Length: 393
Image 1 (cartoon, helix red, strand yellow):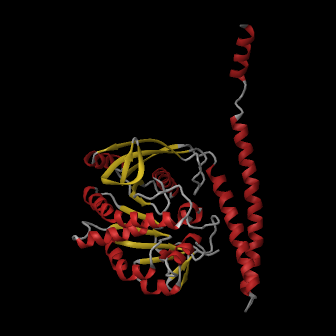
Image 2 (tube, helix red, strand yellow):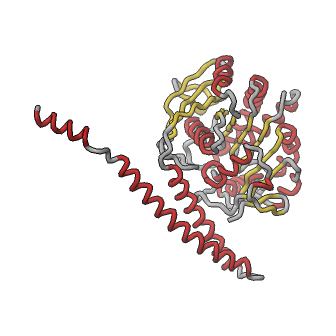
Image 3 (cartoon, one colour):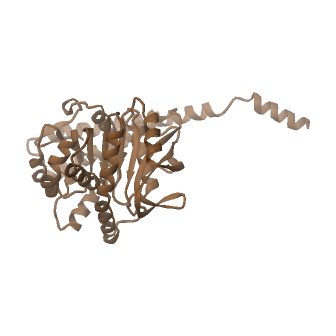
């Protein structure tokens, strides 16, 4: 008993190791950032030297650019980790609607017969860096409700906040999409209320033609359910509504807006419509969707990249026809409009696929935050280049 009491007293009296460990971690990342900054200065210097040459050898140009892109990406990641230290964890409620069918208490991959509404709670852990979606960003709880209760719940939760509606892309399961919606809403830093529309994508599978074809058909079938959902969202809520669609989700949104236009249009405009890495045939977009999306939103932003390997594969699958997100000049030129902004993120690296730049890159998340704040494109440190604005390396 005496030994137990003594050990208890010592444990109570001993200072916690947590502050000391936290300081060690901060010191380690501070040193990491300093090393990255030193390398970045050297890489920027080499890049300037190459650019100052009238006609640099192509190989030298490519090597200097690749070096700068890689060094900047490592610096951004290290900086994001350092800046995140000490931030608390938080629970993020994501209001969702889906045309997926329920599978027990979870949401499956098959089409449902009607829209299902609910709220999924996502845990954003302490020390969460911008753009990270690791396993610690986790779904805690999910419950469904009828449409009237859902709209009332959203009104209460979103009082004084923008609604950030997210439509995911190909190969996204419901849980992954919910985690991504919560992460993006957290990382833009403007405290929007996340709303998710989830369609019956297969999810959690490697690319295959069969799976891709399944998702293409599912996206086409989901356009009308999305149109019904978006129409009710705009009619039932007074808050500003921003809509972000990723990859194949841009097809769901584009076709849904056409359906709404065919049935009388929107009761009011979206504030911002963002198409991130849109996996949409560029010619079809120009002919079928361009005017419709401009009529639906105060401003439209497209994030594209010519190094997006997922879109390169999609282009090959579709017989070589350009995708809107591939950043090809011939496809972008016909879309020029004062309210249609194209941001070229080709000189930005996040991973080997480079398809999730707008959700994973701290740099693009910061630019997305400016878009959601309606910052003019001329004030966002982008370089104008023909029909687009380029994010510099």
